Length: 163
Image: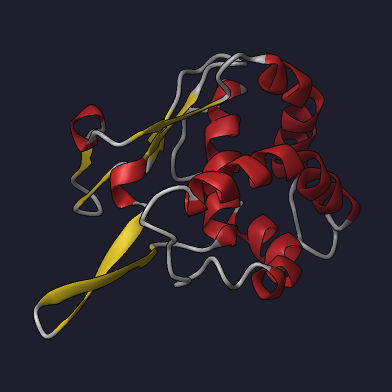
């Protein structure tokens, strides 16, 4: 599914490059707004992937997953809390395979909230041992990748490596 994100989102890397490494206004709110925007824009990204399926070299299973997510997005958007931003890292499991906290988790049911780990949203930038600013820890493409991955779980896909 990684090729999906590269092919569809390349134009958005340029448009949204301010997010990647961009300074945060006070340390909160910036990536939260990006996640919300990406979630609301998901129908566009998924339709583009289906239109460009040959160019992206999507196989039948990948195309089927994208179509399934697209078909079920209205259930996701009707959920009272589609995205839950959680600043408490203790609520997220440690991933031994990459030696880091999980970025997100959800249940295997349509409309389940996608829980997002705000504690990893920003990097601290120090100058002369003094915290001078916070910057976004990842860019727009990663935000979309996280959401597609979690929405894949809502379709009962459990294989983290495939998603």
